[in-house]
Image (cartoon, rainbow, N blue to C red; front, side, top):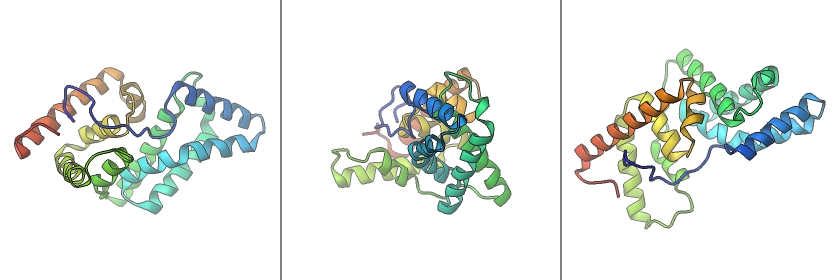
Amino acid sequence: MDPRADVTAALPLGSATDAGSDRAHALLARWSNGDDEAFALLVREHQDGAYRYARRMCGDHDLARDLVQEAFIRVMRHHQRLQTGRNFTAWFLHIVRNLAIDAMRRRKTRSQVPYEDHLRDATAGGQDKPLEARETKRQIAVVLAELPDKYREILIMREMDGIPAEDIATIIGVDYGTTRWRLHKARTLFHTAWTARYGAALP
């Protein structure tokens, strides 16, 4: 995670492309006109990515499933708030994130999911040598755990999930300029922590 560039393989959390967002809007329009199957399709296309995100936020399998289910209920209730042209995935993950934060506050807990889990997902299918890849992922996870929450969250979304900065801004509920600044700060903090711990550039 060199602060000067995006270097990690991306695993998008659901359909974050313009075409994917257009499809989500179309499915919501069909559903609002009485097509229940359209909403079922929307759920199937977005639930897995949302679950991975929720589990990383809360560290609990069952709670993550419940949060995603509640998020889809919120979409059904408030779909009119999704403006035309707005990215559905980012809007939906914003809902998931808020629900996860509320749940963790009630439980007074934080995610305990090892970051190696997400690194395995993000590089699935890669051609890295197994032993070298595992060690690098372990080292990255160690450094990630040292970062402040707000910087770790944004860095994982950009570098591991491949989410564009403008969509991250929607997800975390801050303006684009602040998001870009936090991302730069997060990369700098990661680079500094990596160098201090391992004394060499990230492979």
